[in-house]
Length: 260
Length: 297
Ligand SMILES: Cc1cc2nc3c(=O)[nH]c(=O)nc-3n(C[C@H](O)[C@H](O)[C@H](O)COP(=O)(O)OP(=O)(O)OC[C@H]3O[C@@H](n4cnc5c(N)ncnc54)[C@H](O)[C@@H]3O)c2cc1C
Ligand SMILES: Cc1cc2nc3c(=O)[nH]c(=O)nc-3n(C[C@H](O)[C@H](O)[C@H](O)COP(=O)(O)O)c2cc1C
Image (cartoon, rainbow over all chains, first blue to last red; front, side, top):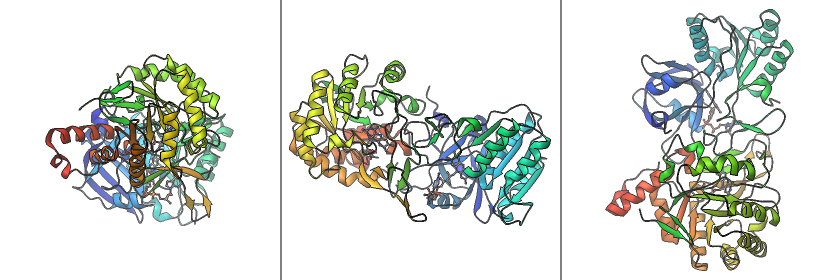
């Protein structure tokens, strides 16, 4: 029952790219993770070598290359842990655990991917898997301003059509990305896969309920253990009680959780 | 490593996983060898299932962790039917942490556990800051603490550990009260009360405002309380609070602890307990120099 190969281990950074002014992509040599990972799962990383920060930090698997044996994450610098991580360079080692958690269930159909900000991270991996299965997903991606949308080229490389939205109107639709979703769902009804801030996910839940299409959402909550032991990352279930983001998620069917 | 005796209970080694930080063991089964631990203290078990507190439930502090979990657990019936048999299969001593909102609650949970196969001992949680009634109310008044200990003592033959709260003026008074009431051992510390404030909104981050602080940040407080209790009672003391390394564990032994528990450190690495055990083994075999260069895990 022990799965030591996916347990905490030191892995080397083999790639680093500043994707936008405040976000970085890191690639790690971690062949076991590369072959085990499912879209939507997360990696639990130590972000320092002292007692502060004390806890690991969760990051969605952003891309995998099972042939070369690498996994990537894409993250925004928001605090001490992500700042430390952003200072890692090829050759440095990082303590990585996982992949952990439950990812997206791939439904038949082409699929709308809906991202808010750095919530795009898990959707690149998902898009690649959907493409491998012969689906033709499309991405709707919203951010505060155009500088945050730099990773769009990665989707275009996969041949995935992208529609953009910004809060300040500097790129694409001027307004929330869910405006785009409302529009497209009236044309092509396909399963929706979403990751982003809570208000965006709530709106995704409403729109997909109205349109009667399945939707899965990837949630964030402050997390400690990462394996369902401490019950720290609770998220209210629709109909009562709590689900654990680390163990029951991070991906949930939208109708299962309270997004309000 | 040498086995330790806690009243009627013999543990294979003196390092336990602390309540609430190790779930019901199974969560960590893929990630560490449970059978090598001195014992596992379960998440608090109550008579009825409990939902727990609304999020956020955890906030990190410098070298510490504030939690407001609120005894989320499946209730005694599900614990006995599903969790206990699975955990018992690992052959590790199981200490069930018992919690309640009234004296009757503690007694009926303890009574049902008395003849449950696979339970090595009970730990009475009278020290949790994260529920409105019960919990810490019993653990901050020596008379109440004595009453609940005596009442549980009458219904169980199992080794009875009482877990003490650090949120008191004189913890030695509490230790004496539960010792006189029939406890076999005491464990300490539970979390220290604290809060987290959001400077942007000017509002408390936790909905219940108060939360419990654990982790390396609390170690000096825990050490001193263990020191005080070990001098106040003859019962064995299980020491905890911020232990992450074998060196930390040795400090607790030096303060008077017979055994230790590792809590928050499990969140840094799932094999944290095992690393402490292995460090103590190296210390036993090679002496202090074996731990000189040891880094924080
Ligand atoms: C399953 C999962 C997957 C994730 N994937 C990604 C990813 O792919 N890319 C990415 O950039 N981020 C991702 N995150 C978020 C990422 O884990 C956090 O940004 C990171 O932990 C922050 O660490 P830090 O030390 O830099 O910041 P901290 O200092 O811990 O936090 C920075 C600030 O944000 C606040 N804060 C922290 N967590 C929360 C929260 N949950 N809700 C509200 N406020 C909070 C803190 O109080 C502080 O003010 C994911 C989170 C989860 C749960
Ligand atoms: C997330 C979390 C949950 C906890 N839940 C419980 C609990 O249910 N019952 C209990 O007696 N103690 C509980 N504790 C307290 C620990 O068992 C321990 O007493 C305390 O955390 C100090 O040890 P540490 O610093 O090694 O974590 C909890 C602690 C944490 C961090």
